[in-house]
Length: 79
Image (cartoon, rainbow, N blue to C red):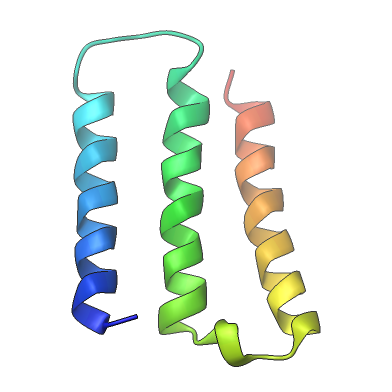
C-alpha cells in the first residue's frame, strides 16, 4: 500500500470517528462503531507502518491479538 494512501485512510477514519462522535446522536451502537473504526486504524498502522504484513505469523498474531484484546477490553469497561 502506498504510504500516502495509508495516511489518507487513517485521516478519513479519524474524521469519520470525530464526525460520528460529535453528531449528537447517542445510543448503544456508538461505542462498538467507534471501537471498530479504532480497530481498523490500528490494522492500517500495524500492517503498513510497522510492516507486520511481512513478519512471521507469530508476531502478526501477537500484535493482532493485542489490538483485539485492547478494543474488547474497552468495549467491556466503557458501558
